[in-house]
Amino acid sequence: MKGLVKFEKGFSGVKLTEIKSKALSEKELLVKIHAAGICGTDLHIMADEYPYTPPVVLGHEYSGIVVEVGSEVLDFAIGDRVVSLTAASTCGKCVYCDQGLLMLCKEKQSIGSQIDGAFAEYITIPEKIAFKIPDEVSLDEAALTEPLACAVRCIMERGNVQGGDLVLVSGPGTIGMLALLVAKANGGRVIVAGTKADHERLAFAKKLGAIETVVIDGEESMQRVMENYSIDVAIECAGHENSLDNCIHLLKKQGNLIQMGLFGKDIKFNSDLVLMKELHYSNGFATEPTSWRIALNLLENKLVDVGPLISNRVELSDWERGIQLVKDKVGYKTLLIPNK
Ligand SMILES: [Zn+2]
Ligand SMILES: [Zn+2]
Image (cartoon, rainbow, N blue to C red; front, side, top):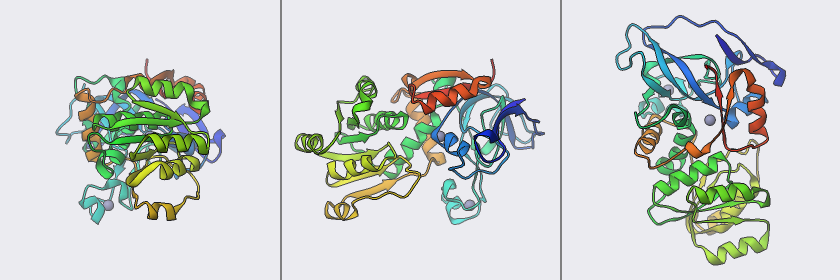
């Protein structure tokens, strides 16, 4: 089968190539990939900015159909539509594993960075990390369960949005839109903030249910927002120093600051102001099994509609174009389609 493999350092170390399928062990599933979303993490791995163990098939946001089951698989059958957790292998006996906090296990290995991922025709996964896709959810939508679960982890499990809260989402990219949808599903009234370059994205945020959008381009615009709104929760989704600074300044005293974006480097921020405003700070490292259950529940019950975020569907053979669409910020989620 064909798979997109990171072999070695450099962008030239990424190749679509023929890979051997491994024999299925007793508790594994062979899943035919329906669609696999390109994530910022994939770009970071391609650029050697995120840890990975080569050679490895990239991709961790996917949906698919079970086509073969190991001899001891109990809960899945051929034909089941599935998604799966990213942390495919953990020690199973440390203090974090005990609590179901798989991302925090020292021996964690994830699909798409240490274990072969989803930018391929098929993926082999242990049964224990798979979740069935509810009938009400399409396979395309289900491919966005992973990033949705990241938003759930940050906003519902580690952070907290109460009904009626005024929530500021800073950064109107795919992560920001998912944050908007999850905050709204929890009863938040959401304002989305961006820069001058974000006009189209801010208009889209309104369509998705933001009560207001604001362009923040300096002192005056900040002042205007502070005079007009008392922000209960600010969610940093851009992974940008200025965006974090805006969140800290715009939050009301004792407000909740949630970091969803990754900065990819050391940054400066006004920690004294965080103290003087008595802000609460939280974040989330990808997803845990609990986040997936909540995310699938939100999709099943139509509390969140990720459909409008799917902008591009690109065949796996045309993966370089798919990557370019993400780099050029064309639309929101780009899905790679490995099987016709
Ligand atoms: Zn991702
Ligand atoms: Zn462990």
